Length: 132
Image (cartoon, rainbow, N blue to C red; front, side, top):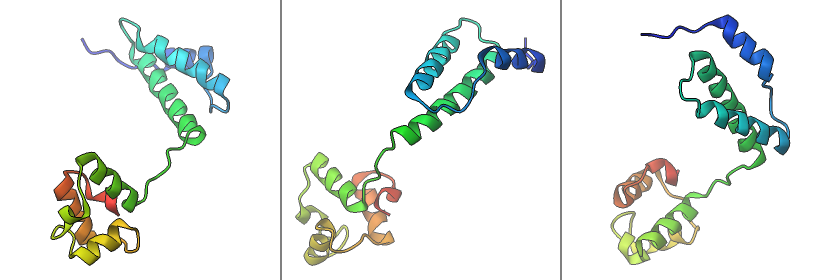
């Protein structure tokens, strides 16, 4: 049996819960509580699922603004991956260039080219976009 979406039922849910753009921790906590309540319903209706999707979008938007994740530089990503794998600069010779090139890249004195990003991605098994 396929459940169909009922616009009137959804409109009533919107009227009952009045979701809106979240601007404070208190509003975020309330939205999270409601989302958790909806998520744990044993038999969620299509309208409740749509409301849950809306709440999750509003929560994510607020949290992306309130708690931004700092973006790491390509060099910082490289250093982290080297540390995690226990690599040293010599391990990258031939992967991204000569000893001098590796040293300059690792020390942040030279940027990572697209070709080097692809080589590093293959070497570490990650997406090349991390190095660009």
